[in-house]
Length: 100
Image 1 (cartoon, rainbow, N blue to C red):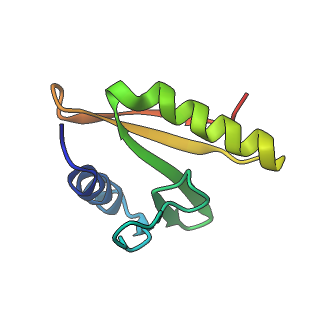
Image 2: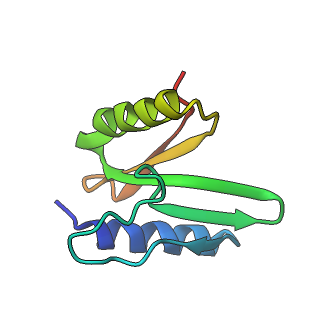
Image 3: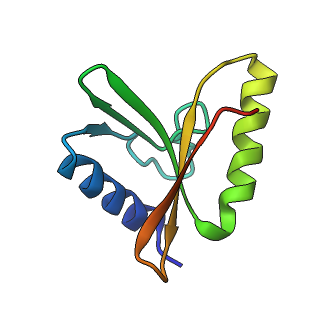
């Protein structure tokens, strides 16, 4: 299974190739660095923005639940893109998730 840093690097390369500017929280040992606990990577391009949760294909369901729980608990309306890395296909499976 690829490390989170490897998946993040692949996502950043893909986004930057498409003209997106990216940002992610710095890793701090034993501390959570996800934005609100649900966003690994931010990307902007012009007026567009993406909130991205990175994962592997086997963890998509867990990430959906994590995002849905956060949105419901905090009464927040937001779309988070889940980018799941497929080691077999060597590409991301992407879905937009808003908790509904």
